[in-house]
Image (tube, rainbow, N blue to C red; front, side, top):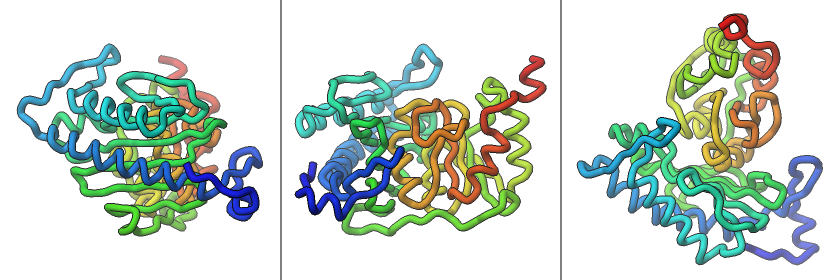
Amino acid sequence: MTHLAPERADRLRHPGPGGRYIATVAFDDDLRLAHVLADAVERTTMSRFLAEDLVVEAKPDLTLVSDADRAAEELIRGQLARTRPRDAVVGEEEGTTGRGPRRWVIDPIDGTHNFVRGVPVWATLIGLLDEYDTPVLGLVAAPALQRRWWAAVGSGAWTGRSLTSARRLTVSRVQHISDASISYSSLSGWRALGRRQRFLDLLDACWRTRAYGDFWSYMMVAEGAVDIACEPELALYDMAALVPIVTEAGGRFTSLDGTDGPHGGNALATNGRLHDDVLAYIGTGEPDRDSAES
């Protein structure tokens, strides 16, 4: 981690949640490490993508896990243990290890169902939470799409193949839901949340609807190709890496109750201009009538 002289840190501070300030260049070394991790994992995951001997199992929650998921997470944990031994690690497959104030949050393969079916829309998510549980760094690597996105607090959001070959990301300027493009994963989960009809009403109100799904929806928000992305049920490891990329691109990322960040169990990401209007459709409040009666 880069250490700044006090006067240097003062000049480079960035406002964070609750009026707190974060030194904007403090995560340069961590970001370089995230790229190194992504490079290493890419070799593992791509060697197993479309492999005829891929081993796939159903977890207790009926989601799938492959030998590639487990190998990728083990690789990341091993490298972090060597390079960041004081940090904790949170992963989808092995839970939390370590007790450091900072936490690396990883999803070795986001989109495992796509991975096992041969659909190239899957990615490794690498996020970093600071001692205040604020997402300060995120990297999303989708090697089958030959795409990568990343951001650190105060440094902007970027896409490209490396730190030295990248394009800066900016969200769209769309201001009305009737002109907006929305991306989502599926309808599953919206009824259980009591929001299925509200979500359908939102889809009807938008100009364009597509189900790109998983991480890709949120990266498209950051790129300005999509204006709204939302899901009713997500874990921390699904979201931690996405938050800095969306927010550093100028967007907003909250739970459905409007709380900033990845800790609410669900997600809404927009270009910021549309956020409050979208929350009015699907934010927490009175449940759908059909959900209440069912």
